[in-house]
Amino acid sequence: MERKLMKTATVLAVRAWNPATFREIDLHMPGCDMSKWDQTQHMKCKVDSFTYRDYTPSGWDAETQTCTLFINAGHDGPGSRWVKALQPGDNLSYMVASSHEQPVSNKRLVFLGDETAIGHFFALQQLAGAGTAISGAVAIAEQHHRDEFSEYFSRLGLAALHKDGEYRALEDWVVDLNAGDPSDAVFYLAGYSPAIARLRRLLKSKGYGGSQIRAQGFWN
Ligand SMILES: Cc1cc2nc3c(=O)[nH]c(=O)nc-3n(C[C@H](O)[C@H](O)[C@H](O)COP(=O)(O)OP(=O)(O)OC[C@H]3O[C@@H](n4cnc5c(N)ncnc54)[C@H](O)[C@@H]3O)c2cc1C
Image 1 (cartoon, rainbow, N blue to C red):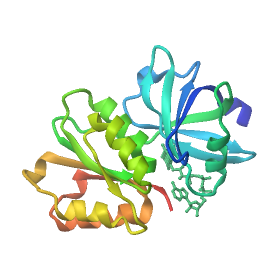
Image 2 (cartoon, rainbow, N blue to C red):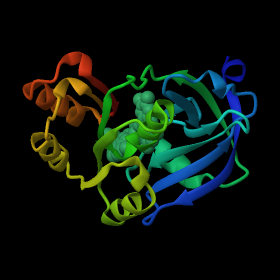
Image 3 (cartoon, protein in one colour):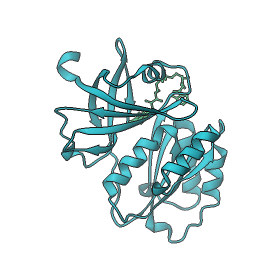
Image 4 (cartoon, protein in one colour):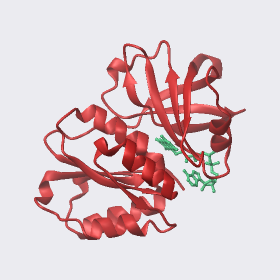
């Protein structure tokens, strides 16, 4: 069954951030029709025998059938170990499915999450297209990763905040949020499930309606 469902991608390049607990993986995915992607997607990757983990393709190019994964590998788990071993030229087995998230047009998009959501936010930005107003913040544990994120991805317009276990800096960012016209904003939350649930409650306490908050817990 696995052989029928899973496709094969090839690793084109691996870029490790410093320290190497966060990696960008460029993939070639022959036979994958990305032209139909109108929502964020996730790749269920085989990381060990009968073991699968989800990662978000971003920066995809339907013509060349390539994309980039941004993977946090600072913890001990089969997915982390797998990504740290990936080298250019390696093949990987995957299956793509929709994550059922898309940018709401003519709204201000606000992205809030952790390192695992960086690919998801890039994917939303790609779907939203140029000219969409985007703001928000990403909680990142490593100071040097925050520096790299701010230096190389300033075009995303997101602040890089210190990540502690409680995601306090992200919560403070929401508390200090200058609401402007609240009905104009749609929030996309993704990452550590308990923190995402707290951010959701905080936004609701500030008067944002449920339809304005799109929350996805990525890990527990
Ligand atoms: C739809 C979707 C899209 C996702 N996209 C991405 C993505 O693009 N990039 C990405 O990095 N992750 C992404 N994730 C999250 C990723 O699938 C999980 O973090 C996964 O648990 C990692 O597997 P693992 O085998 O390394 O750790 P697991 O075996 O699942 O967990 C081992 C231990 O590590 C902890 N842990 C798991 N993940 C993390 C983490 N990120 N940081 C700190 N501790 C952790 C767990 O709590 C557990 O204690 C996505 C998840 C979903 C559901």
